[in-house]
Length: 119
Length: 109
Image (cartoon, rainbow over all chains, first blue to last red; front, side):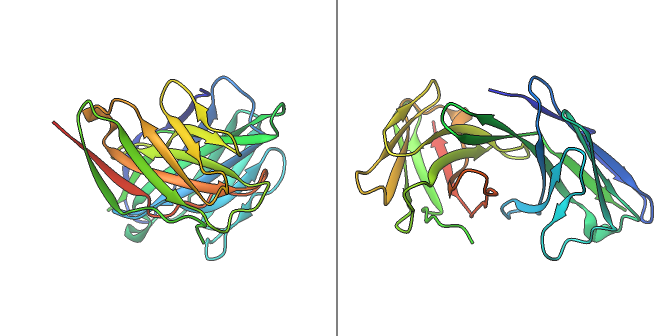
């Protein structure tokens, strides 16, 4: 299957600083990428949908000014957590969609995740 | 809201088949059934998906009932590395994936 990478795998930062997470589709072009957040013992929650060359679409309750998303190319999307606070500590996961036109289906391939700890 | 219902947890003996059920009684004709799994502290891994017909790949088999109101994911010979949370997701082409709580499968030695 298609491969999606994330960098970094984990990061620890001080409260008030900003953290950038990169998501790359390695062997396919992804028009659409997604960012999820997962708290301990909970399921994934969609934060935003990122389309190449346009503004991201944020889910209700997700602050767009705090979670800046840039999708500058078909293989790269970045999530920047600005002025991070301890409550932003979470597991952030990106995914990219590969469309199988023969069947008209989208399959999402997920990155390995980035664990953010804000002190 | 997730459109599926799965048991919260299941156990399976190593080497035996793991059969994970999923109810999706409100599925529409054009909605696909997708299965993903998430091993602890990793991103979800795609397993298989289908519309009406049963599907099989190198990882698993997907059995969809004739009325499409339920499906079963089958791992033919479960190993300890198959211990994970398994998610059944129903959606139309172009829709966002919505993850429910899934089924926590424990493969026991």
